[in-house]
Length: 344
Image 1 (cartoon, one colour):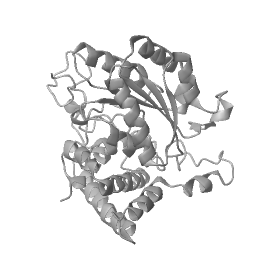
Image 2 (spheres, helix red, strand yellow):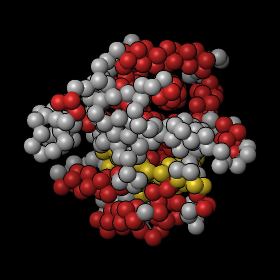
Image 3 (tube, rainbow, N blue to C red):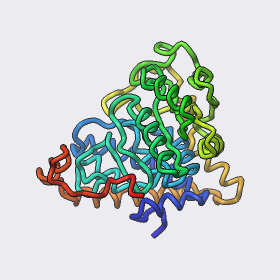
């Protein structure tokens, strides 16, 4: 069993030190997303799903650059981030299918993935909700005397809400150890960015809050990791927050029912020519870490592993009603301690 297929999220995270594992993880994210779409069509998923195929370089690049003790908040389009950080395919697919094998016991669903062992706070369905939460996590880290960094991942649509500006302002004033990461995939739900935002580059807004604003090619995992490493090091040194804008693209529509017919002709094809998996595979081939034809072999291996995880999920039961209601209030009967983030 490879570390990629380990049931330990922490072991999977540590595996990302290996270049070939980084490529394998990007492929895994792509295939898990594809399988989720099929599971929805087969009637195994209730509610909605929001895929991020095409953005795998951002997810893996971020995961490479932070420690498991660091705290991450992200959006409902968070399957790729959860997998990159270390959640297992079974943990992600199981949660989306509402099975007890899922990372939150099947009670959270597609938009609420969580795993304390790798720093992933529950992902949020509310636009931009993770930004102020990340500020709170950073403030808590400082109060506890740790060098933890908080990373807030959000989409370009979130850059126009009050919480974005309030969070950046507060983080700057307090010099909090936060890295704000905008995944600019050009669309806020169904609306192209120029129809909602008067600036082409979200990163220039960093100047208003006296913090670095960096624009990154989000299709290149190495460039993502390099920019993140700089921002994370700055935060850890106590020098305050940064805003890092990842220029990327989602191949699918906003949600499972969106055919994305609003996209200009040829736009998707242009982005497909800069697929993050292909870019990274070509680099590993040049580094002699991947043999000629090795990408196809890896894809076959990973697809089989995803199918195995899917079968395991479908054999897992749904939670009982008591489990579903066990943690909805302060006086709920649940004693589940899996989701504690501040144990020291």
